[in-house]
Length: 328
Image (cartoon, rainbow, N blue to C red; front, side, top):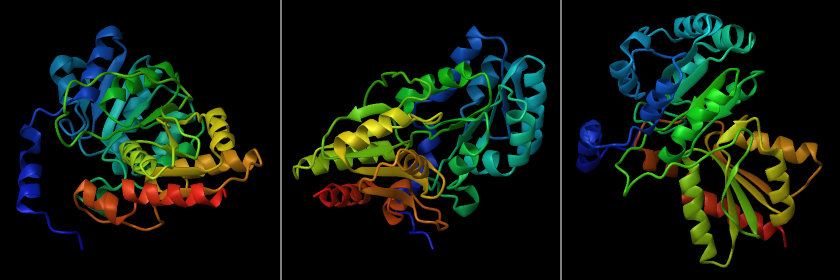
């Protein structure tokens, strides 16, 4: 059973859509479409939750709501791509990655078409429970040939993620999380590169390699560990495929201990990608994966779920502290 919402949490959830939340992905897609008339937008009856209502209102002739039919949407997107358009297809991660996996592989990836697959509600972060939680989508998409996989950690990287998706000539899976509260100040856009991680913090005692929601948690964990005299690096691996093998190996050698942190199952996702790199290079260092431990989760507020399933800053700090100690 999920922990019941407090009155304050319930009120916040009900009123959240009326707050001035940043719509950085929707803005970035509209900006890209102004510069490239080939870009079209598809949604499976989820315009507002995927920020595509901005595109709908700006370019109605290039917007297509196909209804609750993700598999059909991918087929339509494949046909559009074959006709010279660049379709961005949107739904929740659990729906767009799993309901139409065969269509993705055969109608987008196999012909290596520029179909951009955009999923919202990543991992455990939803009140709606198991049916809406995508804890295996990165594993699925990593396994598809020709597929790029991106997971930006926050609004400051959303425009860069759209730009990277357009730079890749083949299919892309873009795993998105909308902010749940207004930012404390102006959002300063930051850049990304294909196949490159972003070093968010430097430290010599261990390295946390992370993505998405767990980046902020990892930075909090790093600050807490620094107060104990444990100085760690934090790598934001927004581009999960192609993977920054060089950066992983450099940090494994320099820090001597690796922790991965992801809002996803520990099987097949970011942790598996890092483990594969270390194993292929025959590098043996203390290593631990923080993520969902091969189980189904439940609905609830994001902070509650991150804490309950061991994805928050405290869990990341515990794992990193243990790996740093194992070096000695």
